[in-house]
Structures are given as structure tokens and as C-alpha cells.
Image 1: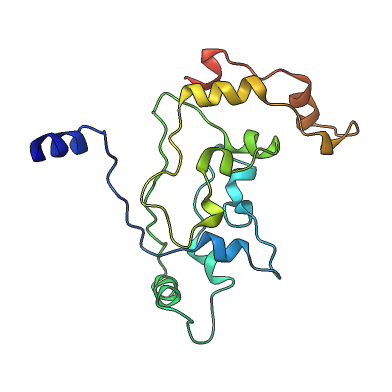
Image 2 (image 1 turned 180 degrees about the vertical axis):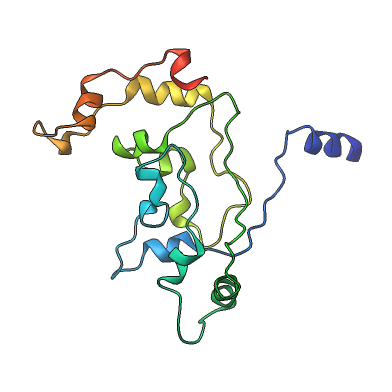
Length: 177
């Protein structure tokens, strides 16, 4: 039995747990009243690039600098900053190499990050594995049922209005390149 479990682990049945360099609490940051942070407050590239990216150490230190660190995690963060290094975050979500996914398009369409990433906003520490298993069937289901958000109104212009006028394509070449 142990041999089968080990084989399944190595064969991809069970994804290995990923340990991040900092125990980043998404929940605590999103609950801050004064800052009114959203996912794209830190993952800024999601609004303009295909990849959301991870925030730079400088971005984190714009709030967590000066004075005494309040926790061990803040001490670690400040140490990365003092050494001039970036936080070596490890990737958790990974799509197959032939799949193209643009965060920018999905953010512009007002699709909540939790739709694909799961309830990150409830976490007190980074997930060890992806919270949701992404599948082609899930993407197609979303594309088939998605409707343009009504709150944008008829006066919306530019790329969003152009996108709203089109049905989302399920053509293979849209996502597979």
C-alpha cells in the first residue's frame, strides 16, 4: 500500500504541499478598514498583463516598514527588504504550457478572483496547494454562462464595451496556443 501511495504522489495524483517563505494572511489584509485593499491592490499586474504576478518586496514594505515589527512574519519581510531581495514566493497555480490565460481580460470583465482561485480571502496563511482544480470543462462552463455585468451600464466605452458586445469564444485557439 505504501508503494502505491508513493507512486501516486510522484505520478501527480497528489500535488506536493508548497511552503511559502512568509505566512501571508490574505484575510487580514482584505479586512483592513482604512486601506480598502482588493486583490489587485497588491497583484497590480492582473489589471494590465496576462499574468497577475506577485507583489514586490517594496510594495509590501510600503506599509510594513519603520518601527518595530509586530510579528515574526513582519520581521522576515523586513529582513528581505533590508537585504534588497525579493520574497521568493513559490508558484501554486499552474496551467499547462499550451494554455493561454489573461488575468487582464478576466479582471476587466469583473470576474471575481475567487471564481478561479477559490476562497483566498478567507485564508490566514498561504495555501499549500491550489484551492480549486482548474479544468477545461470549468472554463467552458463559465464561458457558456457568463453575462456582461449590468453595473457597467450602457455608457461604457472602450475595450470593455467591445468585449461586452461579443459572445465569449469557446474556439480551441482562444485558449490553446
